[in-house]
Amino acid sequence: MKNVHPLLIFVLALGVFGIITTEMGIIGVLPEVTQQFRITAAQAGWLVSIFALVVAVSGPFLTLLASGINRKTILLSAVLLFALSNTVYAFAESFETMLIFRILPALAHPVFFSVALVAAAELVPREQSGKAVTKVFAGITVGFAFGVPLTSYLAKSVSLEAAFLFAAAVSLIAFAGILFGLPSMPAREKRTYGQQLGILRKPQLWLHIAAVTLIFAAMFSVYSYFAEYLGQVAHMSGAWISAMLMVFGIVMIFGNFLFGGLLQKSATRTIAAFPLLYAVMYVLVYCLGTSPLSMAVLAAVWGAVHSGGLIVSQTWLMEEAKEAPEFGNSLFVSFSNLGITVGAAVGGWFLTLWGVHQLVWSGVLFALLAFVSILAKLVRGKSQQSILRGGTITEKH
Image (cartoon, one colour):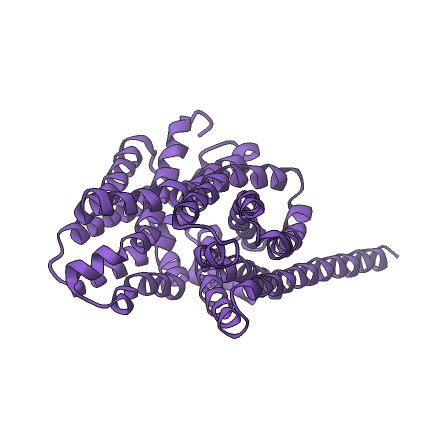
């Protein structure tokens, strides 16, 4: 598959963009949803939380069940379900219907994401696989940068139906691209469920999982309250906060490729340094973030570093899950969602007890814990290599 057209990787990224727009875009249209269905904000919030919960719980198991199916079939089915769900949102006459169709695409989310990353890596020569995965990951950052704000804009300026139909159209375009561009990709060797679940017996994998969970907790313990921090600490107006959210998302696109390049040069150093970099950035935000001008600059840096957490975490986890790549990617999706949930909860706790300005210390705490878990894995790996070398020397004697 060395002659794959570059647009095919773009199509996979577009599918990821559609997923993020569907998952996160709902956040920007919750006020319109509450008005349309005459429900409370707390009730509307279930549209967000139910999605994340379903992804976290079901991801590995559904990916495991789909592991023997042709990857093209899986990708087509997933994006079609996302298109269908968004169309239902646009014309739903009850909140319950909308809630049900939040559950269905959440089931497809981790499966599509896991398979798309593996497919991207297999569609290009081995030496280009890292770049291909980075490009697919760009669909996430572009979704945050443009998909979420555009969905909100359409809901407010045109209609709620237009916002959901936009997301449906994106998924349908991805469907057409996959249908006509992607070659058939049957599972080369059907791994048994036992073989795939076998990676869970590796102690090293759980250190990787812990690091991924903690990295995402570090990222979202503070980012979940980004707008509130800018308003109360940096004293920015609503217009400035909106602009900073857009800047944050746009810079994430460039940060994604920056960290992708660093991982290509030295994956171990980049992964080990990342949580420390995040901790330093949070300290700078704490010390300098009271000035609107300084915070504007730091928000751009923050966006670049934040985007790195996605690809750094995925690379770190897949290093220990090579025997079952789709299942490994589903573990990444599930535990990153767990990290988001834990991080947002602990960040809210810090905010309630000590105020918005002290919020960043929850991020610093999680970042340092992530570094410790990465360091523990690296030390364990070196000690095992030493034991193996010692055993080889003994055998020779």
